[in-house]
Image (cartoon, rainbow, N blue to C red):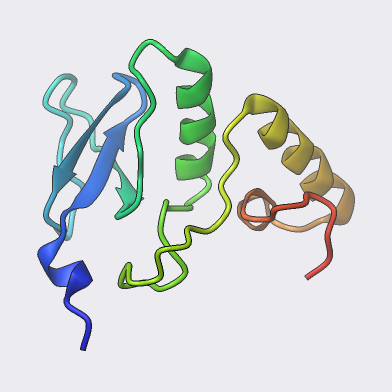
Length: 119
């Protein structure tokens, strides 16, 4: 049995303050130490951009608010190849357009490597 998810902390991010922290998994999202708002769970494999990089944080905000997390293929974290997540605003824009044209949910379109590919 894999113990990765039990012993490794999850990343939680506050996109309004542009900070992230590691915490053990809780039932409720922990509050941000800076603004006291609930933080968003970003997953085990999240790499936060620099605080000054507003464009990258805007992409992170779209991904996290769509309900996606930065995880590997396996839910426990053993699969070290991470799933695709957009890194630029142009990639987010292309996936939003593709989701509107094809009628797929935004979360599904954001997880695709190619925005118009069929699954």
